[in-house]
Length: 311
Image 1 (cartoon, rainbow, N blue to C red):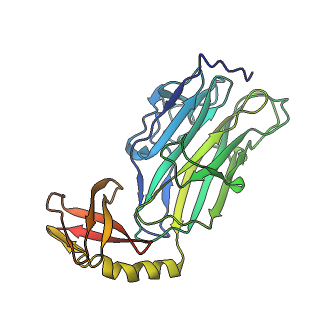
Image 2: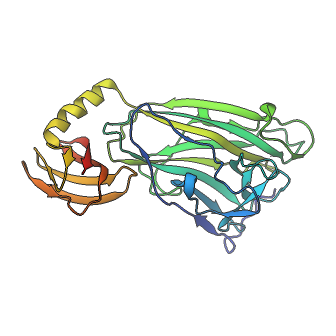
């Protein structure tokens, strides 16, 4: 499709609601996208089992919806791909000069330890071949950011091992069955060298590349992300924790052993309280509902955290 942009027509739609809480190292978060609509259109304000995921569209065709499709449509748009009426869905798009789409999710490290690695896996699916004689692969790229506040802000790092190239570039243009084994590509890679502190958020995103010629209908499915940390980092963090929070089962007060600026998060990653506490200080949490919370702080430049139970 022609790559002619009109600044006067350029539009942007992007939605980011909630965060996905990672509560334990070496425990995978998974997403199969079956919560997408399987008929008609759905709102880009993703919710339910898709809470924490976001979609951002740019271009003249950007709007507030995605479209359920079998690969029959060729317009630039964000799509919920799958067989007719099937609840087995995949999230994808067709890039064009009038529509660029990206999708991703925001995570919060509520494991109580620094995350030093992320094991990421997903399956790329081809639901439409845009142009039979194009001769090159279409692509979806994967990126992550530790300072983004949305899909379109911050500094992003690409992971080439997680780039999905069109599975099949032969044959006529038109609909493909992305659930067919011959049109699916499984990808996985471990991102190392990270230092995501307890309580810190980070983002991942998939970007549908707008290549020369008519683009393919590509999608992602069966996504998983597993936070990992080194044994040393975990031990050091727990040693500091012993002096950080004195009581982990509380009724109305949290007692602290050291001076710190602290934040209290729900198990779902929502920030509910911030405070500065003194050495041997006390924080009143009588206003919080019963449940599990993550308390984070910084001791001598080191991020520490502790899970507490509010009785």
